[in-house]
Image (tube, rainbow, N blue to C red; front, side, top):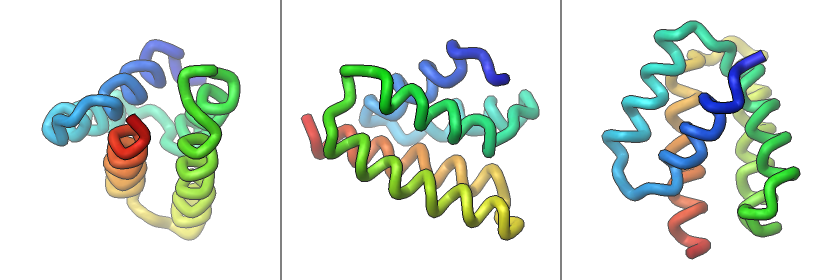
Length: 97
């Protein structure tokens, strides 16, 4: 289980406009050795339980989570997939403001 503080940090950072900060958080998560598969499941739980995210944001990010989960099962690189997810969430959150 990944600490909620890590999931919250990633989501909070994705709400910012700074790619460099998102990239650093992703790098830190990978260096700490957290499972990206576990992380995407916890992100999905957080998205669906937290009233901060609207339905459109939930739907768009959930679709991307599914694609990334499949890519990881097929052997894709965790770092690249997490970076893809984080930058996608950053775009979704910025467009929805």
